[in-house]
Amino acid sequence: QVLSLSLLFSAMEEGGGPANVAPGEIPAEKKKMVCIVVIGMAGTGKTTLMGGLHKYLTEQGKVVYTVNLDPAVLADGVTYPVNIDIRDTVKYKEVMKHFQLGPNGAIMTSLNLFATRFDQVLQLLEQRCDSVDYCL
Image (cartoon, rainbow, N blue to C red; front, side, top):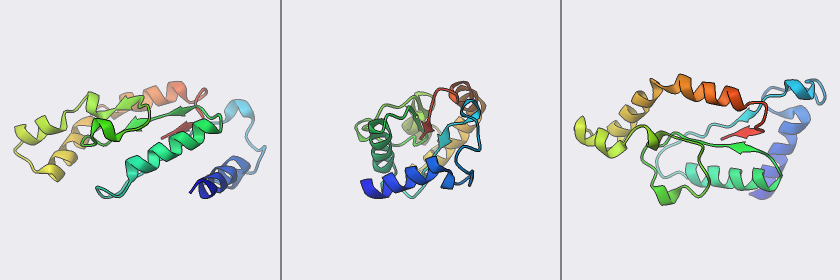
């Protein structure tokens, strides 16, 4: 796993990443943070992957900013520091009870409620883009 992560990030830093930018093409003062968004079904290891990415990147000396968009993740399930957390804004269990929803409906409704404030998340990320290497 570490070897594959190492190859992935080396390729991204050398210009072989999603933007397909050649090394040295972007002046250092114009570089932006790399944002990695992980989506998937419940129980597939998204939080575990994010923890591994955070650990790997910080061990490489990278500055990492994290955003948790999973309203139902357990507090002890997140093993890395979270800078912006949906759970601080939307209470998943309260959404489930208030709207009489099941777990999946409550997750979707929580995300929809949080989406009404996502412009604030983007503003925070924009303010930090010069000092952060990766946003997870």
